[in-house]
Length: 422
Length: 181
Image (cartoon, rainbow over all chains, first blue to last red; front, side, top):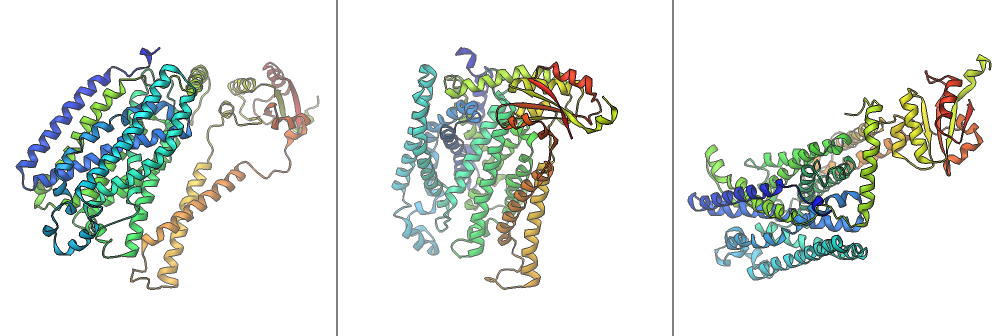
């Protein structure tokens, strides 16, 4: 029973490849950091972007997992083991924060000695030092990971216990932790977003910024899970269990995340544009000139408009492969969004097309590098457990449905012509 | 039976006691070639709608068009009022300040889409409908309780009173009844 529920063998090959690609990309970035002008500056900003993105996939998965424990439903059961494996990468992200710590003075203006900060910024930043200082910053970083780590640890522990003992009470236990867990998630992500991304420009603030990053993290985690599920859908043990119905649900939730991201993003823009205050508006002015406006336009089109209209289609949502393509586009757009937030701060200038490549290539390689390590560790974690929570109360229902579908559909497909179905 | 009686017939109604039976019967009826068929159940059965060949409605399209028109109307109203009808300088912003128009455009889209969904659904179902022949069978009231009904309408091209009655009888119903218009 147990062996038949594990991950397909290909994942171990994938694990090795991802690790190699990840290490090569990171090494190239490190070499580049010391070789080219302003290389370190570019390296740290690119690394931060990749770090925030992949941490978001892990922590976003944690949130979706808790959401599933609270709400139940077949869509959550079929992806639960993927989510759990993604949350178990959180310890790796704790370690990978090290480069950000080393680059703290390069990245964050507030971390530099006060006398080196330009006159105009000094007063505002001095005013914010009770919050924005290195020891407190690191303390908060540790605190976020303790919270996420504990939630991850217990939810994974109980889920494994459920596989072994089939104890029905565990379902309630996991549900009981998920409620407060989601509240903690909301608070920690808000603060983490403020610390890691918003404080890159310490004079600027936006109260919705934490929610914007939260929506982004949820979106990238959801897109990631859809891609993994679609890759596993045709092979046992998920084949036959995960049905178009589940992809339909996942697609609807993906659409909801796309909309909530756009809603938060536009809300932030509208209020700052309307207020037009000198301490708020520069953030957008900076991102609406010298080429950044085109990146913004790409976001409006491909992070919102195109996926929004595509995901309205019922057929598309029920087709795993097509849905995975949209999910892939959204993951790329998540990176573009973080690029648009983080890269303008680096202010690396240089002429011509060559300058463009030299000043920005690490923003491509660093996320791929961290992603390689992340995916490799994820594949390792995914292989540790059965791919379905076989002893959950909902599984019985799910397997019954799957069996019924097999019975009904085969003769039906032959007997009835259905011209409207693609 | 006289021929002149036949146009008076709305169709044949078979009553089933079990949801699985009615789905099987509906499938068989569709396979047999009948197209003007309908099924009634106290609760939604997804397989049943599929079995009678009811795959698609144009309702989503109506909602989409309704939403788009609502959005355009909302935007145009603001554009017309702010730029032509009553231009006001608000905080030094241009008269045509599109970001400020987005929330109302969005709300109008939702409102019009919701109205299209409700009224479109009513119209497509031909509701309200004070009279429908199926109620001529007094037992039909059970369709809201614990019985399932399958109806083949007389205007179905394949419909033949005797043959269709025999066919429905073969599906194992509780009973088959003539329904008059």
